Image (cartoon, rainbow, N blue to C red; front, side):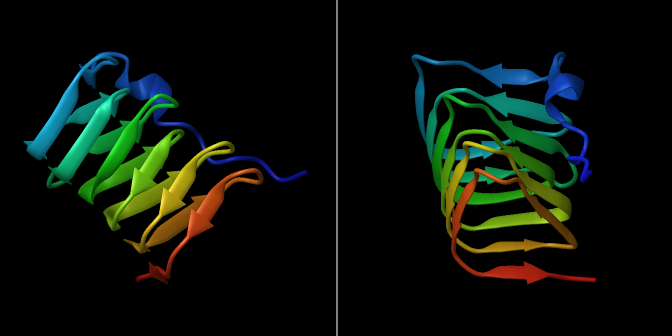
Length: 117
């Protein structure tokens, strides 16, 4: 039986949360952890933080972070220093660059992936 990679979602309980009902256009920078349950257009950046795009999250942006976990929708490039996880039910359209990439059964991914050392 294949096990799924552990989720970052529970570790972001004390993280910055961008909740439903907001729309952000521009550049978002964060340091530790951020959970997105709203719409962001532009750029999302962190040197080494963890980004979770929740089920209600819709990110149309260039994403750079340490760890990225996607349950919702991402349109744009995703670059992670460590891991990108695309969970079942998520939709990702764009290129991904990371040392580790995990795509669960039932997730949608369209783009190029560059798994780096």
